[in-house]
Image (cartoon, helix red, strand yellow):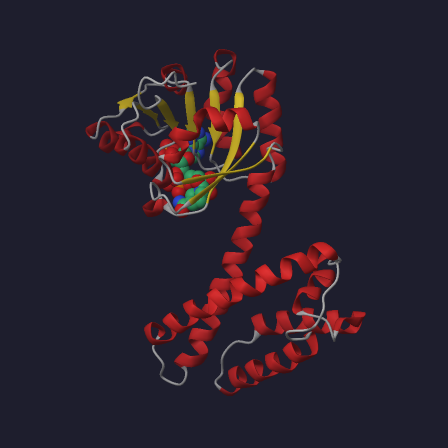
Length: 293
Ligand code: FVH
């Protein structure tokens, strides 16, 4: 824990694109920063900015009360830190390596077994966004560990604490990436569609971005319906959406645009209709998704 004598000392393990951005953000905020990377030369630009290069992960761990790890995957994390587990009691290990909820629980159990204060985290940006106060970093694990190191975590972005269950950050990460891929692919499909009629992506996109604000409003309206399990079709019904997506599919077909994505969406809506939700709101499609095998 930082005793209030200035920015907390932090060690960063893993200096790929993301780990290097994390270390740079910490240096920018005045945190004494120690770095380690398997391939040592990647530390050089950070050392030029004031970081101290550690010769081994053990040296990096010994240098700071807070260790942030961001390596390729779960196996790489354990390859780096396992040999030093016996020295890590009382160290806070914040794992920003992407992984599954099960892997987060496994690392939490491993950490607990060695007296390590563990948080799992998910980075909701790319390296250029690190350090911006509007970029979300999601955390789960013991609240006290998050609170103790919050000021240092705030150097990386907007720190959001989710839950005591270590798996939650990674579960949200997967859910939010699914949302991102659906939204981006929907935008690309729309861009291809209007592009077939000579509308530039740069002309269409500002309109698409404004539309996403409206879509966010629909999500906010539908969330309580989902929690209540009741989907009043008082705005637009599934039947209406099925008719509307038919127009999209027809317009795309006419222009030779791939229709796999709207086909999947239409199929889910039709299954909701067939299950009796034709007169309900679009939120009722979740009943089909929940039951998907
Ligand atoms: N880049 C991004 O935009 C995303 C944003 C969301 C979160 N991800 C996750 O962050 C982890 C690291 O991603 P990255 O982009 O930094 O990836 P690389 O640039 O490929 O760097 C990989 C680092 O991992 C080290 N490493 C690999 N294997 C081992 C190992 N067995 N032992 C120790 N370190 C290992 C690698 O070292 P080196 O190859 O330079 O020696 C790099 O430091 C990842 O989970 C993303 O999903 C980023």
